Length: 484
Image: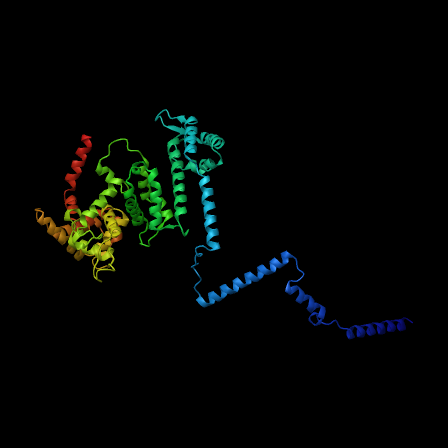
């Protein structure tokens, strides 16, 4: 019986398996309701707003991705590095301008104003200690933290960033670990001043690229004039010319590649801005014209440069010819140097014939700046291009001989003693000590720290006279110091 029962069970299982095999489940793609559901979902019908938004976002991103792939394929292996700026008046341009305005306004509100700075100074003086040895007002780190708390209560959170441990460690400490309060306060004032200057410049930066064009720099200087004590009485008719002269110095030092725009960060860190800000101070004592002329941004200096240009411009055409420029500095500059200045730094005029070349006012300002700042890398670079007669990037003994020959001629015409050009050439080589004994490069002139003196010796007979009489001039300066 057990055998029969087992056989019956096996027979029933085989029948069930054959029945299941006869009823196979069809694939999903062949079922009409699955196809309809997929088509329904793909159309987006019946979905919620979030699902529709998600589908639309994916579609847009996919289109953007395909467009970038297409452009990359067209451009080859070089990726795109230029992004076209939004058109003026477009929504993108307006949004960018509004965002910039709100950001700068927020940054300006976070700055300390004059009243806040005065309150901070009072807090510093009231909570410091007097050094018995020097009489200087100082504070240790505990005083520093206490003053931070007091200032925060009186001024607000915007002064808190100045009282960080890292700021305390920036200043020189005495044996007791104390710092003087005056350097710290001057640091706060300078930080506030530079930040405000950056905000003001950024507001004038029309395309928001971090650079200022000449008209934007002139606008910044024009806005400073009412706040500069030594420029408040400037005649209104002279303001535009002053801004033009002042802006040129920023571009001479902050735009060495002559791209027509100066980096705002570089302007803020330059000595030019510091020199301009010196005009904030009221001059209590009488200042001579010579002392005022040392500051390029002073009214005396600007008027001196204008008078100089007008005196040289004999034909009053607002440009200078080679013949007119030869009268600069009472005609002490050599002819070969004037020729080289026009070759390297003066563009050909579009009017008056193809070969006519006249120096405009901007080029004249660069010329004056180079001669008055010969010891700076920018001034020496300007002059080296003129000294490099063959444009090879270095000077040879033949170049030195050719350049000094004109100086020697003017030297003899002035009734001075006879000198040997070869001796002067050897002296210049000893002063420079070039890396290559057969040639002098710009880097050699910069590293020897006497590049300005050497340039003067080669282009200006007065500069050579000053070098030849340097010991007597130094003795006269020492006597004048002793008398005062």
